[in-house]
Amino acid sequence: MAISLDSDIYEWLISMGVIKTLASKKLFHSNQYVLDDKTSSQFLNGIKFAEILRKLPNPPSEEQLNKMTDSNASYSIMKNWEILDEEFKAAGIAIPFRIKSQLISGKSDAYNTFLKDIHRAPVFSSNDSLTFISEKTKVVIYFLSFKLFQEHDSSKKK
Image (cartoon, rainbow, N blue to C red; front, side, top):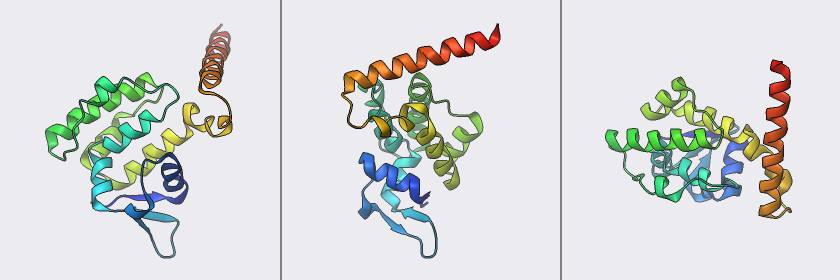
């Protein structure tokens, strides 16, 4: 199974070092790139998603991510995605049940959809504009943004 990614997602993953340009080829007359079998397989079993989590300003515990295995056996895929589901939730990125089912079953366009969701998540989308700010300052900005969002959200409920 080969995974196709939209060019903006492909370039984002390249810029983070999650995939390499040699692991893909551009589709002729298309805005998509097809990943090689090994890289596609690592998206299926979740290993590449763990790499994305490691790029967060506050990455999750390595202890959990190190429990993942680079295997496409059904049990390994299920176990890896259980870990990823919890770690993405902790990072504020929910994996809808329908998307998670499609990811586990290897539905190719589900990867592109979920990667777009991750890319648009505040924890990543604001990261691009903070490139020249120290990591400590980024943490403070994310914390303050989160607090402001909570206060704004709670004032709407009143």
